[in-house]
Image 1 (cartoon, rainbow, N blue to C red):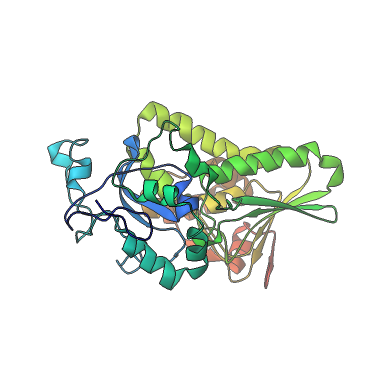
Image 2: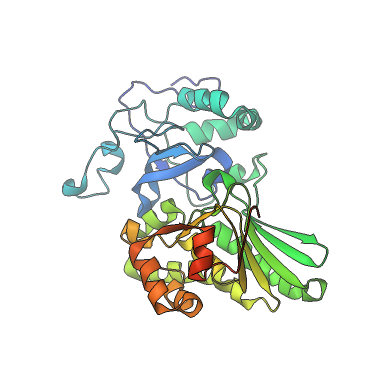
Length: 334
């Protein structure tokens, strides 16, 4: 089997199908976001481009080619009744020329970074063989990609500024983000004499669009016992904000939805941009409200307003948030 200029294997025919064993850091290193597959066994049959915030709109995904028509990839893992085709067309499964074309046209800077990968790394990643989860692909962790921290800490005078830092996905809350946030909270506590207050905000045009959908979708395919432990740890990491011994102000610079709005409730005050859109949108997804919102929201706005906001899933402006009692103050721009 010949290889192309990217080091990826060319397929013998267009109908050949692939299975890609997923690692969490592939999303950062290769810009791939898992969309469908057997999440429990880390088999991804559909992925999209994490550097392109336009995928999924108007029923059209723009991004890396979906690994579609993947019956052979998941057929041995799922009962016949659950076998189905993914998507509406069959790609030449995970064709590297599709990825190259998308990077070159949509993300030229990221494509320039990609070209720094070693030939071996390109070959192993784009091969049709599953990538191992046992550490034998440890060289992939030495790729020359610089991992962007999902949360940053900056000291401005006596103020510690915590910033959610995944603007391409509107600062969706991921496990990695929670882990990093908890680490930085500990750092602030250890250095508490240096700070008088903490500001929590988001990079880009959103505070946080809510929980990471890929992470939440993966829970569907896991066991109840594991889900309980995973979700408890996930929530506790973000709720570590409550451990801060100094005042915490949430500066909502843009959209704050679902779990993204929930974490603002851990703050002592919320400054919200006038045109920001905020809401507890769990009901719109058929989900029970999470992130302890049923505890904190009634304390803040009262049981009647809390019930209305949670049961309606209504998205409101910064000005309306002030009326409801969600906002301590509204400003033209955060």
